[in-house]
Image 1 (cartoon, rainbow, N blue to C red):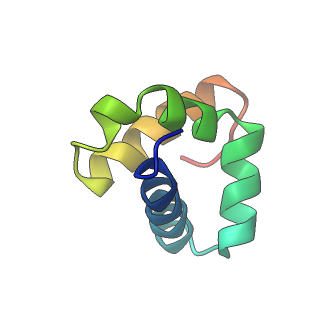
Image 2: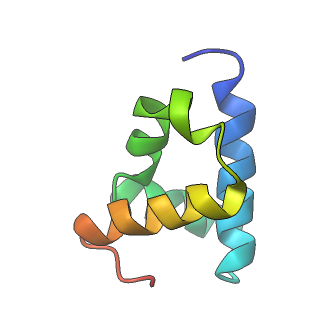
Length: 71
């Protein structure tokens, strides 16, 4: 993991939490459980170039495919 990925992950978790009115710890657990964090790490090279809204939309698709219920 590069030194740039951690701030990116932190920013995405925060934005995800804000969008769905949850605390950051809950957002982190949700993204971890439904493979959202794994997706962000694997596709960092593409995702960090998108807007935060597009990244969150991508996360929703990934999480939904892995059992997530937030829509």
